[in-house]
Image (tube, rainbow, N blue to C red; front, side, top):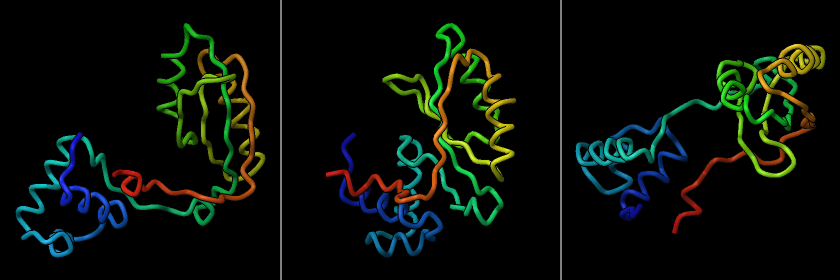
Length: 152
């Protein structure tokens, strides 16, 4: 998709601060408020802007354990597995991957006991799960989702 320089600027600014007002955004991009709003709406309609959210601290919310779970699923049950993952509240992210495993899950839990229950009694019983391997994060080194610096 070909983006205009103004569209790139709008996306870059919103990626940095999704709470920016249309007035402030328009001023920084060099448009009046209504044309800026129309461009943002067009970018949303094209699927380039998929949503807005606040970034919360999992630790401050009492979710101190973050783990990554590599899962092997019986192929015939992959649709049921994915459907179950969509409903599970402790699974923050699920990616279908290549390599030795079929899926990579990012999960959170309040503590080690809750993680143990999550793994033994919940994730292991999801449809089609044949085997999984878990790695616990000891600290986050980098977490960023800024795509615009990567776009020419």
